[in-house]
Length: 382
Ligand code: SF4
Ligand code: SF4
Image (tube, rainbow, N blue to C red; front, side, top):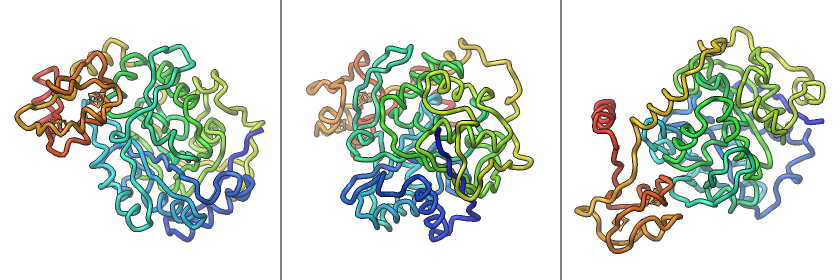
């Protein structure tokens, strides 16, 4: 039996959010089960890109503030981290996102530490699913004592829904995400990758920001829906099972959740999920707009997806005219892919994590597009 707490929360007033989260955690046995004084706790937010908190595209910064306050009051060190999306289009806007979202401001005001995953290096894991490609995940996930997943309640025009299960994709750094979209271009196969990440990282708790959520053409272009809910569970699949039911769907409607169900990531049978908190049955969110393609069984062909990714293919390259030979990039490259003398990058080793690009203060690590036309489009769209 898994347990999902559903709390009603009318807005992001920190005291209200703190009360609702604390009373929800009590129903799961209390904070002492999850964190101890002195722990380093990583809050893995949903920072899909440089979006404001009021856009409903990201975990709201005031939601992050509330949890940060709770944990700091309990004597924990708090890290706030993610790696943004954008890899298919060959962009990696995590640093900008951390500012625009308000996370940097919240961290400064509350005494938390920002972890831009794209700057932090990786840990290599062996996936247990059908894709045997070595997986490189953000190092802070393994350095922290406790990892709390803070997904956003949102629709997703490609994957229909995104929540606790899908939110872990930001554990893959920078442009490396594009490789997974390429080797697993169908929604079902992409679900396999997501489950591999869950099996590689220990997430202790999942607390979903559904106070304002995104409906319609999410994850970034939808409309705000005031759902006024916070969902809490130790089981990401049970949490998402409840959340999609709130929106009028089932696990079977969402390919990523279906993959998680088949790989036993958690509970998906509603008869085996206990609902607690402000509700003891699942509330339904009226007139919640789903993405236009949610009933469309036609899929973009695998070849088309790969063509788009190849078109926008981007790699880091060192501009020797700007390079000051400080070797920061050489020393921070987790794959030792940069030659110390020539500063040439060995693309057979490079995982496009963006550490070198993020850490070069001289802006000598540039992003080069393989396709000239894609470069022109990117410049025009800026
Ligand atoms: S970090 Fe930048 S300046 Fe330093 S060696 Fe690398 S490319 Fe050159
Ligand atoms: S050269 Fe190294 S640090 Fe730079 S993107 Fe590739 S793997 Fe990452």
